[in-house]
Length: 152
Length: 68
Image (cartoon, rainbow over all chains, first blue to last red; front, side):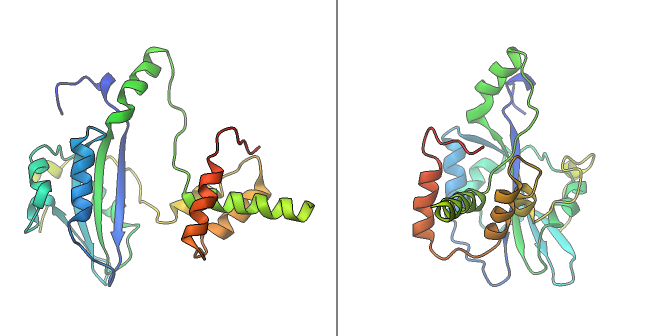
């Protein structure tokens, strides 16, 4: 953690990005984009784990520092705070298919921190949040169009 | 390769993560079950045309549009 108070902490999210067997094309582009988001102050990268799920379902977890080449991520590795515990590995890996590799990211949404603090000072409390899949938006628009066509 | 001692202690995830999060989000109870059922069906099918769909998404976020 930094010297910022908890009240100033932005929302913390996690992502599990799976790379299925046979579809793993690691060029470093993703790492570069991640570093760019961190450097731009949009997010603060808090933790990274790499999970490997074998064909038999067993899971191996690796630290970023276990990778042979970190590229630009090496600069951020020392700033990670190990938010995830070993207990979390099985929970996170539950979503993975056998034979896949996944990157787990934990990050603070720095862009949202000032607004969230302002809402708390105003007495507000977060009661729901979530992500609307783009596919759901597309499907909803298409469903609306179909209904309109039926009514026309 | 075992994780380091810094990974000991209480976890923060709390429960197994489900891959079907996209479907789960779409089937939650809501004001328009008929439309949502259609959403689920479409959301799990491969899309025919990313370019056309990108245009559709643009339309969906046009200011002033409200779906109730």
